[in-house]
Image 1 (cartoon, helix red, strand yellow):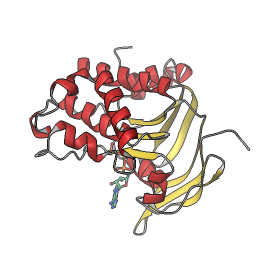
Image 2: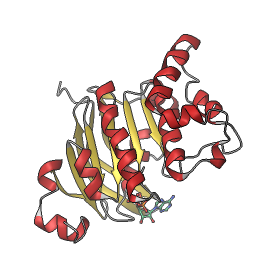
Image 3: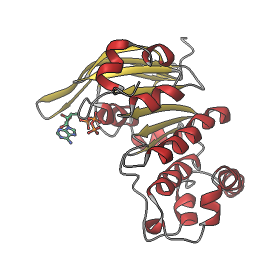
Image 4: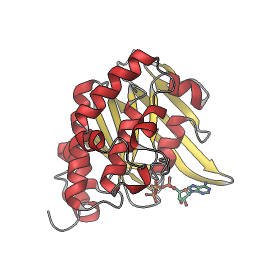
Length: 237
Ligand SMILES: Nc1ncnc2c1ncn2[C@@H]1O[C@H](COP(=O)(O)OP(=O)(O)OP(=O)(O)O)[C@@H](O)[C@H]1O
């Protein structure tokens, strides 16, 4: 028993004959935020999809110290939840109907309780309950994607580039919300190209390049690493 919530060992994923993950290992403590950073095409989305069971992977995935169930459905039932990069909201449905969909595995009283917690956490969504999802701003859409995921009461939230396409001020708002979610007990595996912002809120970080982990360690240490700063954190250090 390692006490880890998630433990990946030697994960390989191929698309056809092309292997894109070449043996990734990663561990996550319960209640933590772990970020996977790296350039476009490094394999970050593929890694999340492997954890969710959307793409087949070789290697070992332990969840709560036991092999993770095989199907996506069983993984959802065990508390894994993915917020994909494209958010995949139903734009012609209202905010409240989108949120409701996230709770399909929960009973009515759990849904009612979680719904109220979510509207308290996301007042902008509460104000826009009746508005169609397609009319929301980029930041509000990301909030809605998060709220819909939280409606399932996940134990492990897999977030794919929540900052993508958002203005810097909105990125900060979204990542603050993600950071606060830790207090609810949910653990978060956060994939980001925005390395600086992700390392600010994460406990641990993994730098992935071309399907391999190049560096890993406490996020606070990676954030001040000179080589990493130069390649991934931009010159505005
Ligand atoms: N369905 C697919 N079929 C074939 N190759 C794919 C498929 N999906 C991704 N790839 C390739 O796998 C590699 C890793 O892609 P992936 O999307 O996981 O990277 P990423 O780090 O998440 O990048 P991005 O930030 O662009 O999403 C890339 O070379 C990509 O072209």
